[in-house]
Amino acid sequence: MAYTVFKHNKEYGPRKGLEGPFHYPNGAVLYYDPRAGSYYDPTTDFYVPHEDVAELQQSVLAMLVSRNI
Image (cartoon, rainbow, N blue to C red; front, side, top):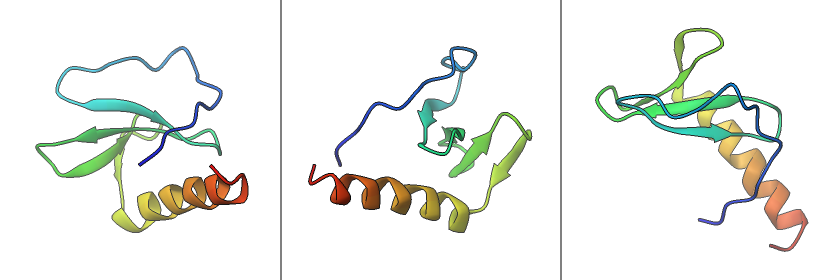
């Protein structure tokens, strides 16, 4: 998988026990919790449904394809 750099919000840094932060083009910032097997949204303090994460990842892939990356 290729990564592209988006505008990062400086308030989101590494968190103990979580992977990330992962920044998305729409401004969403998620962390992956390997123990829960889910992505965590620090702005809502909830885990994000797998369908929503898949949509975000598809939007990144679509953007990369449109740019021929």
